Image 1 (cartoon, rainbow, N blue to C red):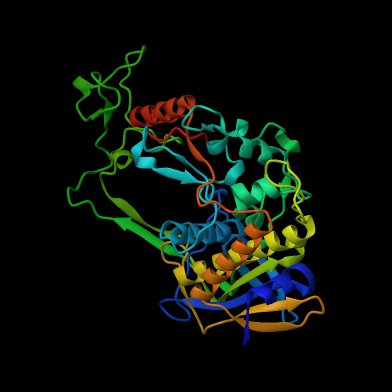
Image 2 (image 1 turned 180 degrees about the vertical axis):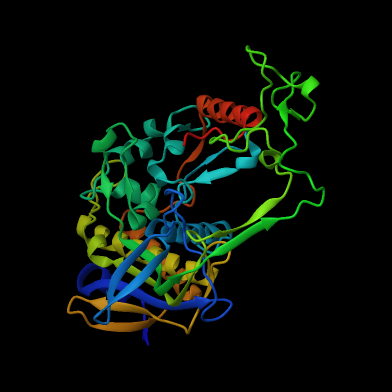
Amino acid sequence: MTTLSIEYLHELVNRTGAAFRLRQRLQPAGGPGDKMFPSTFATNERTLKYAVETRRIDGQDVRCVLLDSVASQANRMEEALLAAWREGRLDFPVVGVDFAGHLPDLGTITALQAPHRVADAILRDAMTPEGTPFRDTSLGRGFTDATPRNASALYVLCPSALVFGVWDSTGPKGGLGAKFQRALAAEVVAIGCREGVKVGSRIDPLAITSGATIYAHKGNPNEWTPDLDEALHDAKGKPVLFGKSASGDRKGRPAGINHGNIAPSVDEWSGGITADYALQTVVFSLAALRRLQFRTAPDGSPLNDPVATSAAARTALAALGLAGIVAARMAGFDLRSRCLLVPEAAAPIEIVTGDGAATAVALETAQATALVREAADRAAAAGLAWSREPLKLVPTPKLVALIQKSRDLQAVHGDTEEG
């Protein structure tokens, strides 16, 4: 296998490389033929809840099911990078909002966790400890003005967003905010699949029957009672059935409060699948990185050599993306309940050059970490330096109040999410 030195990485990113690629065949941890449970999607009750499609593989139409989407795979890589950052194994800029002084259970939510990365509303509605809104800080203003033609501020503030993509749609420019395309994309798909079924039932050891009606308590409508004399009555004098079921089918029934038997049932619409194998495909576009330019320092001052600085910054981004691929692979493929996958055999990361040639490259955790460090040092020497925590932020009072209000409502009414 080829060894990926910092010089070779620099050459690939800025001149000869088309992409890094990984194609990893996976099987359920229980062995070939064991059931896997894909991601489910909202649909009507009698429609398969999986993302099924036909793909052309080796000249044949093959039935496939999505196991893990591009967005989900990106989140897993970001989580792996965050873990490496927290453990001190990787040093790169991570910006986040520290809720510890207001809502300790939330801790710090970083741009590697927020749904829209550094453009997320969580960061938009944050401020420095001194009270300056995030978008009014120098780095916040730089991010607002950043474009692929000059992404220096975003490189210094949140380089991972340049790897995984971001659209600044909630900032001061709204929908006209800059878009940075995703350079690193991955997905996991089950190949050659058949749908299964799952069964459900419950025998209540208390033998509570469905005919035992329960009512809202007149002293507290959020409590239930089986006693008609204690029941709340409406304006027409009718007792109010207890329950929060949106469809109303469990109102007044013990099943609505998780008592009673559940009759045996068969679910044909989300009962898992079996497949020939699962395939993880990772593509890290070096062509996408080459579109990024870094023309000035984050404060707008000129750089001595923007061409050299841009090349060095792109190399650092490539090293960071590779570190994410390696870190996520080491974290494994426990995608969700009953969807733990393991590799059939070790698959190498490949270098794909502009002529289509592919070369396997040896890249383990220690090598990937060293590449990030070396590439970041070279970019710093060229005028763009990384800081481990480029900006400390805390939530604005209105964001804290909104979260607390939402929690209070949930405590009284349960899940109130629309839909």
